[in-house]
Image 1 (cartoon, one colour):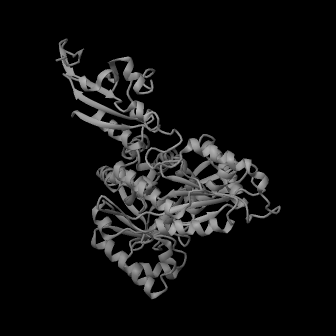
Image 2: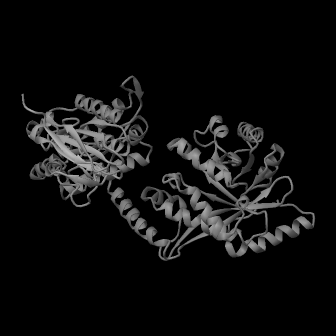
Image 3: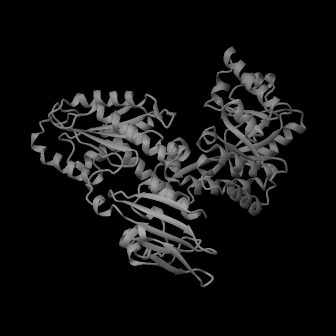
Length: 566
């Protein structure tokens, strides 16, 4: 009987640990890792099996390997844990490898990786997606090249958007697929992708290429022999079918898809432009609320160019000091006293003029630039408020994205220290969207902020999906009533809703503030309903920082003279 094959590796005590690796034969790669995932030692076979990705850095980073997302996540979890692990690693090229991770003494871990099916797996078609069996991005270029070669068959009249014999592509994107992976795990996400693929196949023919070109993105090609209007009908059927529930491991998943449609007509010079047009149409479908299909229109390209130019300018605006804050006064309804200001961001572009926040804030959030801009806003607002009389608050709007890295409490603390502003004079306003993206992480950070004695307001309450459970669970100190309710408060039904919000806030120990007050009648109704404070054009338009001091003095004189605001 042959002796078992062993590998002797020194541990931190200078002793040897023998491990039976006979089952891996000559295909075994092994390494010793430290607690940070860095290689202490490794054989050449391990580097070969991992495509030599770790040689340069000396660190095993799962997300730098060509692994499917579920395998990368499982490997990352195993490396950061301390338990032994047996993993199946699926690489994007179709190769499947097996890994054992065991604990050595002290802070050393032993990793064994094998490819017992390597020869068989390596024969997998590199142009097929290993998870769904559909064509992948490698086949995409081949497919688009074939479309270009058929250009002579196009007969679309000049200037026509649709052609009865122009090929079409449908770019299909699963709505909010990332939330499925984040909340339920990659295994559920992969199972869902397989079911989505199955439904797509039911609606398509073998002659129409169906590809998976991204994590949750599919592309369908309809050849020139099809009636172009069939693409629209097919897209609508796909949207309808994908809106029906999926059942994955006894869990019902309700998703949807957005679809961008582009036609390879005479206005489209090449396949790269065709793909770009489909992507622009897809983005338009998402902007319009998702779960729908949109056809590319030339105006979308114009809008995209403008957005791109605006994005480039916005990234430089902070360094060029083009941003500034203005301050809208807030007044107590019982005493008429000035209680604080809401800081509002403005962008004055040297060529474009004033750019609306409704236009640049979504771009800042999409690009992640909102984190840098948001930190600047908090600091500037605190510095300005430190010059005001004691007791006057400054309210700052915070984007849900500013909570992503978990450092918002630290940013606020830094701003308070640099400005010497008492935390009681700062108020953070958050929207309802924060409560649904990652409620547990949001709650943890909001609790830390509240422990700093900074007030927290729910902005635009009643316009989304916030419920009583959110108000009771999160540490809000104020509820802001959206201006749409205020403007409609002359209607009895709307007035009843406003009164309910005010009563609800009062019963939970929260103050209420109404936005958008423009008339004395609105002011009076809110006063009679028991609302605590208001802001709006009736009180004042937003003020430049240099005008705040005079406004505060004027309000003080009015109070001393027996007058009240409004």
